[in-house]
Amino acid sequence: TEHNFTQGSPQYEWMEQDLKNVNRSLTPWVVMAGHRAMYTSQKIESDYIISLGMQKAFESLLLKYKVDLAFWAHYHSYERTCPVRLGQCTPGAPVHIVVGTAGKSLDLEDYFPMSWSLYHENNYGYGRLTQANRSALHWEWVENTSGVVKDQVWLTK
Picture (tube, rainbow, N blue to C red):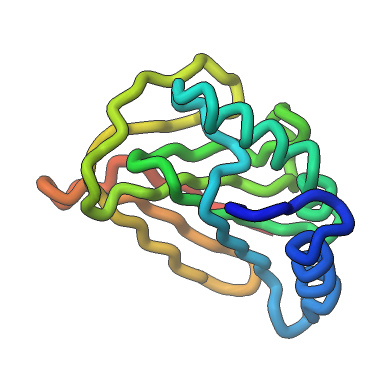
């Protein structure tokens, strides 16, 4: 996500081919990752503008190929969305998680009030993703200092 990701670019073409070739009978959950966040409400205007461009450029691919979960970084903070499509909470759309809280200095900017942003925190932590079975994934975000699970969600099919 640091290079050209618009339709027709090598990155876009690679991503479409990769998603198109997922065998859902072998791979029931499609989880993707990228550096820059497609959905973020943190008040860093230049990065927020890039996220809007990413939504316009390739959100349709995530929807077409039924991506379940997208992990992002770049921000040194934590944020989780509802299943979101075109800026609206929509069942069956991907959940987006920004998890850049492993150790670099934190981004302490506040957040825009977005209906799709369900949880965010500027703290150190890490995530755990557990596939319970073919129809359930469990995500937890754990605060480093306390070891407390501060955010969690079950994704089900």
